Length: 83
Image (cartoon, rainbow, N blue to C red; front, side, top):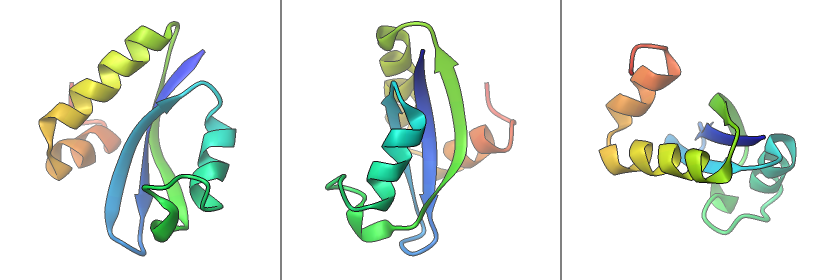
């Protein structure tokens, strides 16, 4: 199982979109400074995730979300209002 996830940092008021195979481990990495991009934003809260059968499908969805370059789209996705 692979996951695409969105986490949020109240410290920096930013969202981060990523994909992984072990969601609990990855969230721990974000919150303990073991991820370069997110280490200054801890604590990070998981806001949304979706599971996929293959890594390629997860990466495709991660790229689709990131390609929007839109905070509004991410917030719609979190609140269940996006396709």
